[in-house]
Length: 173
Image (cartoon, helix red, strand yellow):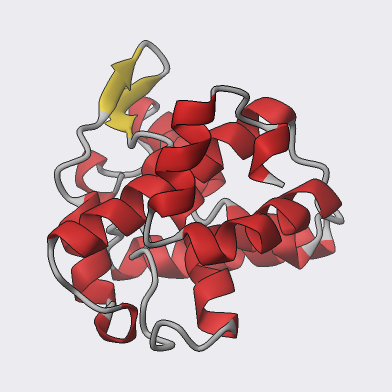
């Protein structure tokens, strides 16, 4: 199935030779079923392949991929600053990796604790995130999966807005 997304034989051979290759066709099928765009599927395939290559380079077997190992992989990914993102955002590799790790967990290739760590929020931020997600589910009628997919994004934006108005202290944002 990856041949539907990459046409250059050299690229297909490289991805097929990677450590993650045995899971990629199923990964594509899942992403297609969830109606991801072609561009997004290509990016997520490249990200899964890059993670597999990094795991192989680090000589870590899938069975030993824990949250700490994933954190080591994600840590050097620099934040990209933007006019609307004061603290920046991580490269697409970091957030998209959670979908691939979920597939690996279902195959029992990685332990259950192998996840991408949520953004670092203090306890108030965590409580605010939970409250905001409950609001999205109940009042705004957003699906729980949407809230899980974008944890704390709305809360951080809202808290940042409130801090510009002096309502909350900036260190909570």
